[in-house]
Image 1 (cartoon, rainbow, N blue to C red):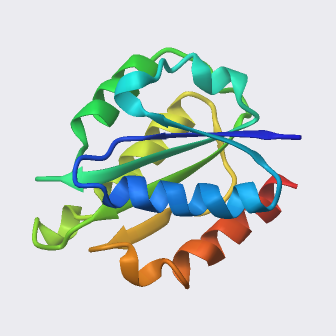
Image 2 (image 1 turned 60 degrees about the horizontal axis):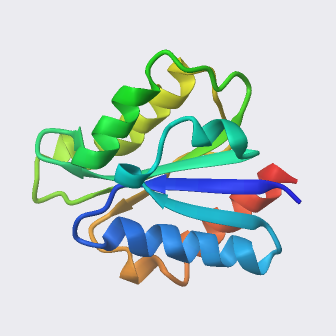
Length: 149
């Protein structure tokens, strides 16, 4: 059974809600799923999982959530050579519209710079994820599950 590690940063709870929804859908398909908050996770844990998913909201002028930003900094220099990965990015257009989903871009960059392989397009959620719990989120979880097989 393949293991999927979700590492996420969340302050207001929207990113955590999204990660938990995706993880629950994957768990129901019998994948071995682990969720870790970025501030409690060492980047070396990424090496132990078969698939890694990084998730973060976007703050201010296109910044990662603080704990996820520190996690990504610690990733620098590590090798995820060929490891299947995916990204979840959330944002709020009340911040600058051009940056409101920048977390997805930053996480994709961190993965590819470490040699990881993005296996599906990023899940990008603008505003609250609540309205996407029955549409976009399950569809993306299925796409991820299909890509892992």
